Image (spheres, rainbow over the protein chains, first blue to last red):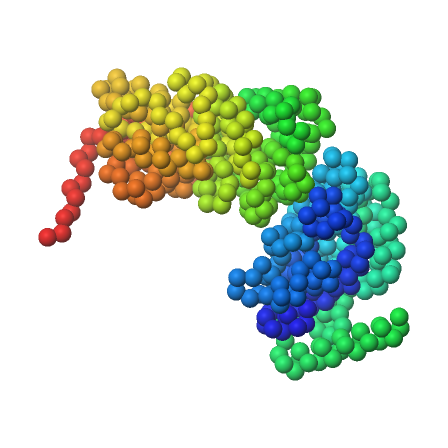
Length: 259
Length: 314
């Protein structure tokens, strides 16, 4: 992600780092199915499409797209833009307009019910995306129809493009909102893959739809980006790039030692 | 047309298990036959058009053919971006059904008048835009959607008495011509066909021979039929219950210009803000120059005008 972001000289790094552990968890065995062309595969909607780089990394790690394609990020004529396009294998839906993805996922979950399929639909949304009224249309529908095969993860990093969510349009108390709308609510650490996996594996197959409110750190892993609004849009200069690689490499080696 | 639509859709659903009907809490005294016959394939999503179209996209990706039903302004305009980024962008067989073309909803007022739906939907790549002229053609058009792999918009009038001579014919990319009059062509969009046919009779009484070109499929554009229908007439009058820009008048202008036709075009449609004056659809059509009487008067007035001399360079 860091390499591609630097080469392409584009931003949205902070938003992608924020959800990297969530995508890592989903793509390390939670999403079921026989690949992008299997009609019975679990569906995944990256509703916060601006974190496409994290999705491309996951698709690369799972062998859906090769290194050459990954390296075409934002190159003229590429299928890999800063928002995902469904022409790319592994991208179920094109996204980028906030407030769209949960409706897509809700329809997908309804389709599974109508056809008697056990497949699940996962959606990943940003917290600021809850500003969009259309989100709550889908929230009400999914709860009313008890679409338990729908699993929504909200990336609660507390930030949006121009400020912190509590300054721009306060969302709190987010958990009580979802509960009031009839969802099965779980608050999790969005960087604790094991904890997220445990919750995802234990979700009830019937009843209310599920939401994981994943507490995350915007720009996670790169100290100068963490919780900094500017890194919603900024690309890195050479010095920042080197620092980011260095910090993430140190973190990775620590993780390996711990394992 | 609502009942004709629901009957045809119910029959389509009998044949095709993929067909679903979603409504945004509208269709009282219209959608019930479908809901009773296919209760498991009927969903009232509530008053939430954006979510309805978004869900339909998710359903279509999984292999279903959802019809989403609402009043045209809500179906087409409230959810416009979801149509664009959903069924259009993904090329999925979602059918947007909008009831109440143009001024059809009369005294319900301007929030219910779909005066720009065709203009905003017409540019979307791969979206079929269908505006049936009467009940039998509505039934044919619903059947024809079975052959459309991508998305479609159906613009349905509330009532659709049968037009003599049309005989329910409908084909994608085709227009239908009634009469052979060569003085003027009345190019009518969907639900304005009856007014055009009536104007044709009024003109005949004044010694003017008119043909009526019924455009019930806006996209794919009936370019070939329009060229053939306009090739030998000096004047065309487009007729639509829609703002005058972006609909069938604009389509006709494009066809005339792009094919180098000598036909002069006059466009009838809503030209000014209709805010502040309500009433029946008949009253409103007359106020906006769209009643048969007003159309005939416009045609006679325009026929009496001498064409501008062509300016030739030395």
